[in-house]
Every structure is written in C-alpha cells, then in structure tokens.
Length: 418
Image (cartoon, helix red, strand yellow):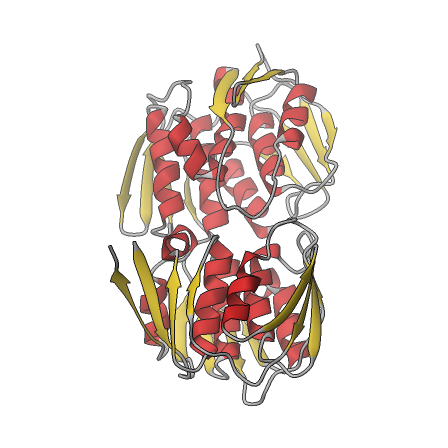
C-alpha cells in the first residue's frame, strides 16, 4: 500500500498542462470495437482506468498497443465474448462495450460493473434503450445478457440525462437499421468527442452537446485517427488547488467553455480567472468567500468537482451549502476533512461548510477518485504534514499528479507501507 505525504503551506505557481480526458477516452476505446479496421488515438492519458479498458478490449480479441500518449487499436480479430467479471468489477466504464457488442455481434453477456463507491448507478436506462431498439434483455446471477438479430432505429427518451446511457445508445445505434432519436440526453463535452470520433469512422450523428441526438444507421464503419479532448475535471482540480493555496498559475489546455460553471463559482468566491484559447489563468491573493453550490448535469456544476470545491470551502470566509443532486453517497471525503479541522455538517445530500482559519495536517483515507483529489487539495492548504491513504484512486483519473503539482511548487511524495 502507498501513501501520499503532503507538507502544506506552499503556494502553487507556474504553468501546468492538462492531459487527455479520462471520461472521453474510455467510450472512444469501446467504440473502436464497432469497426474491423485499425484506429489511432492521440492524447491518451496514462491512467489505471485506461489500462483496464485496454484489458477489456484485449479480452475480446482486439490488439492494443500504447506508445507515449498514442494508442493503436486493431479490432479486426475481435469477437463477441464474455468480458471477465474481474475486469468489470474494477471499472464501471467497462459497461460501455455493451453497445458496440450488441451493434456489431448482436449479443453480449457482461457482469454488473464496479467502480467508485459513490452511490448507485443502475443500468436501467441503457437496457431500456437497447430493448426499444429490438434487443431481448435477461438478467440473472449478476450477469446481463442481450440478444438482437438486428437492431432497429427507435425514438428513445431518457428519464435522466445519463452520460453512460447516452454513449452506449449512440454506439448501439450507429449500425442499427433506420434512424434513432435520443431525447433528454447528456450534453457533456465527452459526448461531443465521441460523436466526432464516430463520425470520422463514417457514422451519421447530429446533435451531441444538445438535448436531442439523431443517429442514422450505416452498414459499416472504417478506422479513424482522433485526438482526445483535454480533461476538464483535471483542469478544474488544478484551478481549485491553485486557489486553495492562494497561488497563481496557468492551466494549459484547459477549455474555458467546458468549465463555465466551475469558473463562475471560483470567481464568485473571489478568485481572478483569465480565459484564453489555450488555457486558463487563475490567481488568488485574499481569503476566499463561501458560496452555495449544487451539482447538476452538464452544463451545471459537475459532480466530479464537488469534493474539490468542498475542500476549497473549508477555509473560506463564511458558510456555504453544497447540494449533491447526482449521487446519493458522495460525501465520504467530508469525514476526512473534519479530521483535519474542517467544520462540515452533513444531512442526506446536503453539506453545510463553515470556513475555519486553517486546516491541520492529519492522516486521512480516500475512498474514491475525486474524494482523493479533495484530500490532496486539503493537504496542500493545511499546516503541517498530511498523509493520504488510498492514493491508488488518484491513479485512476490523474496522470502524473504528484509530478505536476511538484512543478508548481508543492511539497509532496509517495512512500510504500507494508
């Protein structure tokens, strides 16, 4: 087991570059299964989740090679197989192969997926969509099976704008017969990136980034080359970390239009934010002010930034309320922040955060990816030494996090324990 030691009190200053988006590369990797031709992906982050998805695709018979930040995937020899339950338990996004398997091979059998312990994320919307397109669904003994001699177009309204369901149904529809219309869909930038990749492969998709997506089915797809968009959550995490230490830095590659809700909250708290085409500059000189924040589907404030903003608010002036409307169990980090001296009261999905003058370093434990990021931010703010257990969660979603923070002046290092 490894722990991350952080000596707080150092301002973050300089320039840091954002890696490719974890939440964009995973569905795009799954989408390569829709063709029989090689695909080349660029700007691929070196993350545990990307490696696990690579193993999932290899299990299905595809060839996967990574060189630097490029990924070569040849799915020509891939075939429909049961994805190993051990892999699906490690990565929730492994369920994204369901759409491609059903579309290309007309069937799939997968175990219920795992991932971060942040609350229930049922697959009902995915399965209802598949059924509307002609699939027969069976669930038994922890497995989901689906068969469809040929998928057909359908008009599908999602009860909630689920990112995963939107992506799975897009991929299922590209080879279906006829036109599929998806309504009340997720609008995240990663959905747009998936559309752009699929269209490069020869798909006919319109509307990603809006409420309705229209997909006209085609008979086959070709290979494609594609560069992954920058990771907006990594960018947001760096902006919050700089703000937390009252520093100043340029986050290169961050896309302002992808982070409008986060930028608005940082400005409301008192940070100076300067947006450019190639990144975002942030500077904080005085104590920040508390704000109220509610997580919402994109373009609202992202649930993946809620733990980080909570950490930032622990030393802000005044009291702020955070409402977590997406996941019912995403406040694990609050108890750990309280161990560092934070004043946080939790009731259901509501957290009341009253700022304290300073946090104190302490041993803490991360239980999920973004919660781990929040504890790192708290450690950067705190007086003294903070030791974070559960740093393996960081490696799922942040590429070379310590190295990047060190380049900004942070004092932190990993060490192994027995």
